[in-house]
Length: 133
Image (cartoon, rainbow, N blue to C red; front, top):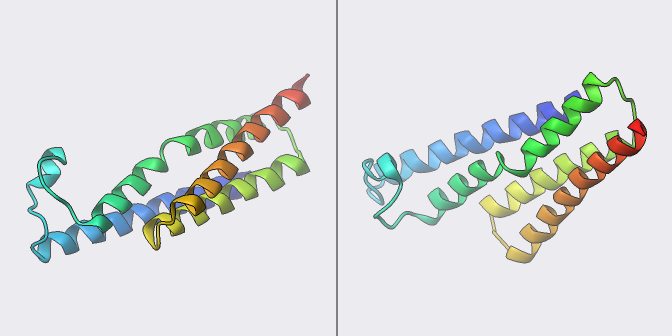
């Protein structure tokens, strides 16, 4: 579990760095003014800035449930092969979703990877509850 949480954390940091790079490049390129980032409103922004910012923010939504359930497996000292496989699937889905969103941004592909990751978190929670009954 700890390795999956580490990889997801590294993905979050990577996407954050990509977002910062996109913002700086957009400011330097004159596509957006630095003052936009005070409140992040009232100006058209380049697509790459919007995509990377939304992707970064998204990594603090459903993944929070993943971090919590993984932490519970660790704290409660529950070893489950099934949970390990599901956790890795979750990370793979999230990495794929980030790649899709930041690159070619195909909505159906994004939704499939998002749905897969949500189902994984749901399965981790159900598995945890069943193992504790």
